[in-house]
Image 1: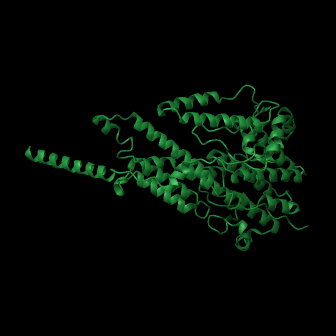
Image 2 (image 1 turned 120 degrees about the vertical axis):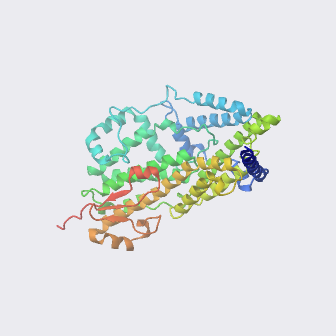
Image 3 (image 1 turned 120 degrees about the horizontal axis):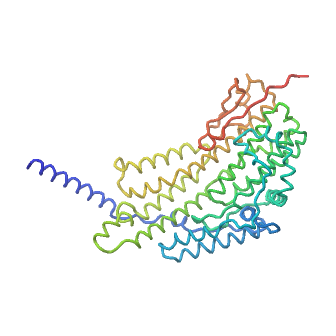
Length: 468
């Protein structure tokens, strides 16, 4: 019995010593870094309303006869005022105010909805859109008449010169017209596919040029994670349809080499620069974390028992406020350096950081809960960076498909041709050529994002026509 008591005594001393070590390590918080301080300040972009496609998207489903830009500006102004008003509320009342704002933001019965006469058209990233266009081409004119105002709005949207999300970053984000813009866009995409297969290629290529240019302006403009995710998907769908056209033996790529090369011009460093978006998103996260810390401090009591009970949650020991916010700032800087070539290193660094957060006994015991909190929020941002880099790779893949068609390269010479081809045809992840499978006549690359693995990252070369 005495031996057992001694063992328990030593175990208690060891446990107490470990707890004391953790307390000492986590006794002080860090100073808030300059980077974290800068992220907390939101500087809205300045752009005249009439030039801002963001406002046109927000108000896209405005009632018939309304101006989408005017309606979008009204919605954003109301959102910004509500966000500002919530700042003055006690932390406990902010969630209730957020729910109330969400309830008021519901779609009005007067708002336009896209009306389908039958089954909605499928997305090129999910099915073979060229056969669909031929099979259902007769529905296109009827859908355009049925939704005439929405089609006019989308075509006007394509011509707007710039995009800037001027809403104040908040958990309650502003909807882009409740997604109604996708209805006319899907029909117009099918119409372009139909035109390209029925001897109206110039009209089809003009549509692709306008739509791709517009969504590339969204990539360049200041926007949220949701804005950018939508742009990547829209561009991916457009590029997929161009790739499907280039895979058709009957499509005369030589006759339209110049407009096709313009459509498939490489994404620029500015278009691939996600730093403004990450600054906006991490600024939102930083302010949300600050509000969480404030709530925890408000809930904790000065009593000794409550001090120990609430201490870890209010940042006294295991969750350090400034140290956590500084991690957010460092991650922002790391993600902001993203490019296809740099992506693997960024991915590995964030994954290693997340792994270490869940195994604090293998590294530092400082701020363990803060590290976990940041780690669980990182995957969606890393996935966006992967999608953006995969988009750049897919665009280069389709460009390689075009150049191979224009050069009439035999299957046995594809790899050799690509080695000497322009940089615009190379895989931007590696700088080398894409994977060539002569058996399936397909070029491909291995995508890094979950979504592009679902969408597919390969293109097909049609057989070279026999000389006449």
